[in-house]
Image (cartoon, rainbow, N blue to C red; front, side):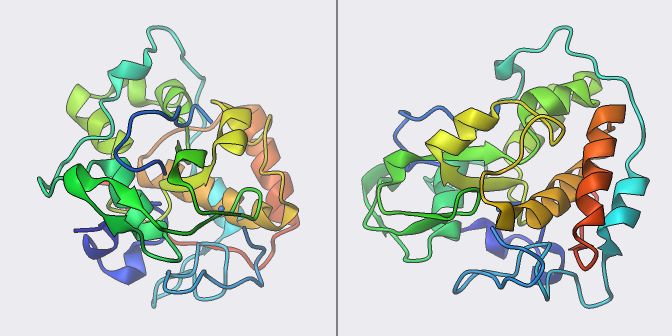
Length: 245
């Protein structure tokens, strides 16, 4: 079962990788299109693209940013393993990163024993690069684990942190991107890092904002200023999200 089947399409826009089931990549603690781009073949339109909002409408990016609560960041006590990730939550033999790879492939990979994947094609939206080797992809938590900790996850239970780290219930929380861009991003927020492809900026701002709202995380002053600046250049971008259970 892939994550696209977990919730209705209209509310699946913000959860969104990555290697097959081999533990050789370093993921995250690090999407492309502008507001006039379309989704990849066979994939729902991203948050910042036409059709990216649910049937009853989303929020303009600037309005969505305004809904994120202010907060001071708190890094004390952070450890990456405070977020148990890449688990097989539905028991189908594929861990989260493989589920994302399967879901985001533009050409579906073959699935072998123990969910080993081969033969797929992916497009990394951060840099608009097409990838055929899953070993060259990382799974990025759109809002990195360290940033989530800083923004409120330090007060969560271990179970909720695990749910965050394996969020297959929204389309854009997790994303398959080239290892190079993911490691360049590391745990930076939009005040310190944006995707190298300028065509990705509006979608990235929408995905970041929607993920913060989905998980009720806070934003600091510099981060908000960077998002507001992005919103000024993305007047048609819509943010659709569903608050995480």
